[in-house]
Image (cartoon, rainbow, N blue to C red):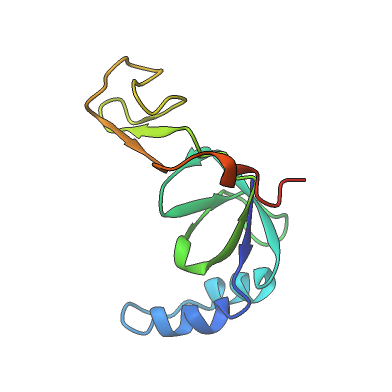
Length: 122
């Protein structure tokens, strides 16, 4: 799974960070990543944010990026899966948690079909 970072990510970061404090480290990261496809750490799946795999010399730990900085998604592995609020894990099924067996605590990533999951898949 990969995400494409918005071309205007550094400018968008400047606008969004005006209220809570601007950080040159983030600006440098977005300046490097803008317009690029970046691999997502699929061990940390969320509905509205992405953990980018470390990039040597830029960041050493998975980096959490909000969906507002993402332009496109390639090979989205979240289709057909859900986050379980009971056991805080990723279920491979949207109807029953494949980890704890609960039904009432699932939040599917998507409600629609999985055909979009293979968009731009290479």
